[in-house]
Length: 254
Image (tube, rainbow, N blue to C red; front, top):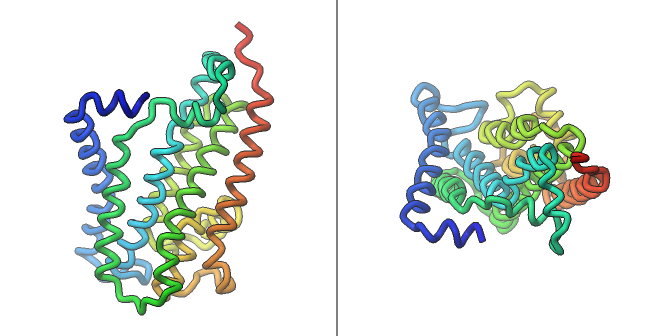
């Protein structure tokens, strides 16, 4: 319904999608400005940082388009409109994800893919079948990881009622962090996004394998290929959290 509504005004859609692309491109412009003063950043050249940026932005863009509406759940919990979704013969998770579905977010995905394509043409990598396969795997796994975080954070809003900004600090903030090399961050932070909230599996760890860069934590080599099982595990845990949160919902009482 929301897609049909959006495409009813196609010029408006193209303009908003282009605006979305332009706005997100400013993040990469910031990186370009940094490299006018330095040749490497955290041991990474510009094409290598662009590779991190492209993979993180594309993964996050897909998750944001599919699950970005989950941040509105807190509002529905507070005003009781979630009750309407419970009456429909459709999974509540699917309804919340589809609520005000914003097709304009394709602009972010397109911009991420453009930067990723440019980086792949410039990065100095000895390509092998494993490394070639690892690129789409990390993008898909990263999208699944971000989606799991969206769902888990939304489930938390069943109790907190208004935690959308906490969710944004992990999702949008995590996306921004993953656009830069892990070496520029404190080791404690890198450990936190590896073992607590496993954002490092979105692109940091597999990208280190592709680019041939050292792991700042010195983890075993097989960890670089663990993004798919980690993403699956996070999705299962997020689904469990959603189920528990939905069962605890008691409406507003009005």
